[in-house]
Image (cartoon, helix red, strand yellow):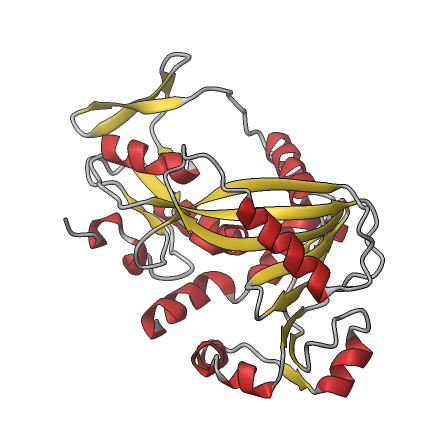
Length: 315
């Protein structure tokens, strides 16, 4: 755990600044909000029970302030009185609309000259170990470099490039009370007993969490979304019960050691990997991009790529 936390810190510690810079470049700076995140517990004893997690955060440089019951009530008045202790991490940030943010980044990339091709990648064409094309269901796309950043589909493409990566779908569920959500939080909140994130977005109040190890094609178990919804209502008792509820599920591409794969492929020096980020894909995205860009161009990387090598797995 200590090793994994230290390595992930290299990808995550400056994520708010990097996302703020990206959002500004994409002309949507308001989508990155910097009010911190609030962790809430029934009492100080419940917080103390997670001492290892907080020690790892402190070692990584995370700074926070403690809130007793009175301070917590003043800071987040709508919170259920069942919570009597809080931790506010002021440096944390959140995205007010992930869908709009990704769309804006796509537009920004197009302005920089990126051409988008809608096709399903199926493999690679090599000549003596050098990449000649990406094979797709729309025909080959000639290129001399390729980056595999395809979420759960990345394991299949990595295999075509000579690497067997144990990638699994660690599925997470979401519920959203659409429209305005008076009676909810004013900043992201992580209730300790729910193990979920409560975040106000431009579309409504979202609760996201749960861990379900399942094949990506397995049918959803919507009981998990209902658990989130019940926790949401319990955490924020003032929420209206008649707001429309949207439910969805996504596949987190997760590795056994909790670290992404960011490296060159075994079969060719022209194929690179950037996948397997599990729960921290959005936060780790900008630093991961900088790292893989350095690998592609042969420039100095912003951190050591060694812990993220695909060859670390043994079968």
